[in-house]
Length: 75
Image 1 (tube, rainbow, N blue to C red):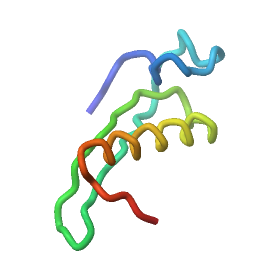
Image 2 (image 1 turned 90 degrees about the vertical axis):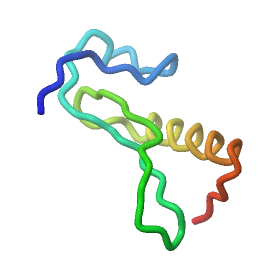
Image 3 (image 1 turned 180 degrees about the horizontal axis):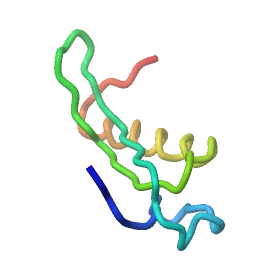
């Protein structure tokens, strides 16, 4: 598969990554406890690896969104 596009993490995107062509994909998945299925909940085009601060922000947003719809998020 091939995808052409630009990185976009929303408003909190790092300025140095703006305008660069994306070369990776970051997919956030939800898997219920003891279930055999998964559901993608977020897909982002990235240029190189996403920074740790960006990953932290995306995971917090994903957890909040899952809890809003009734999912119990536990570590």
